[in-house]
Image (cartoon, rainbow, N blue to C red; front, side, top):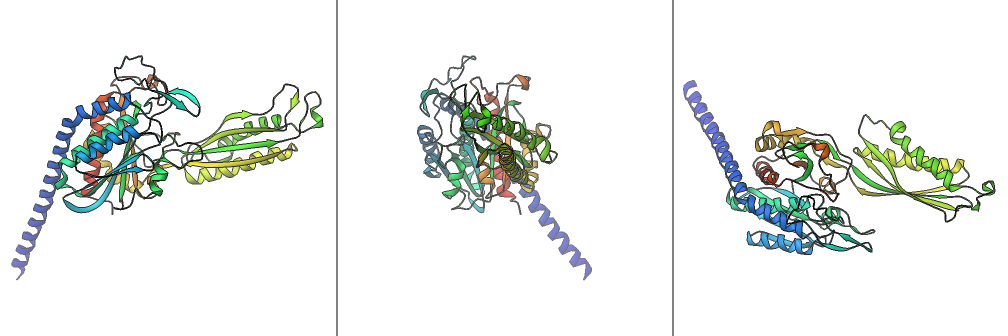
Length: 442
């Protein structure tokens, strides 16, 4: 009786191994097919990117951009939703087999920056508009044109292998990442409020951001805090007006404000444990008074708080309020402090990051996937990550051999990316989607 059981077990084991190897073979074939399709679509991605770069649109005004995206997605046979969070576009691709739902996101908006075309690009932006009452140039000075073009390419690639997809891919083209008008809710936050992660419900979300100071062919990542939270603060210091020649007859809010500005810098350097995570408190503007010989009645200052850790973010908020009000009280003045939370920490889900690392290494090459330091700029992709596990990556856009220290930075007139890096972006997003659908996080 023992031998038949052994024989049965061996037959079962052989069948399981055969199924596993067959699954791996099929997965390998799909990866090869994705790579081939990414190469085929690359010229289109570059052309799309150039067209978008030449025709940029500011936050919540991405009307022509949205129309181009929607037309492309409809031509691919996707279910398309428009007008999401004002100008956003969502495409839904249902695979040939049941499975989880993965989302891929690209931001669409440009910036009020006038392009300095020192490289004589034939597709440089010459668009002009009005922003907050001021005439400005408009430029894709942060690479959002590349993000849109790459995701359009991914949609075309995955549509070509639709029958082999084990689940659903949701393509999210998001407006207003750079911010909405004052007092308005927009961007990722509004998309989430309108239910972009539901119907069907998203299980995981992925995104990439091109970097002008990272060499092409490279992906960089970081678990936990990848990009900082961004909060705005306003401090109004109220004193008592007096003649500038007799300041003792009043309470000087200018001097009081000077002490507050200095003391705010000790919050990070002396009041919180900076070994946990980096943080910044910056006063960006200070205004008060009308004449040299008048002590004004009040001074107003505004600034920003950046943190890579939520507990530290909360601690800085409390310390800022306490510092400003205590100094003002000591000087016989008062300080009113308000803090507006703008963008949360872009926090990469630890388990998801580890789970998808092999996919990244296979796509770009093990030596080309690098752990990076966090950055203190903000990204509203964080709102998606608050609802579902998310992973956000940086994609190299700097020409090979260039000096990162000399690379034109984002949000500047000289911003530049090497388009040879876009194909890796298409392959990365497509492979992340396929690999997650085949092997979701449990």
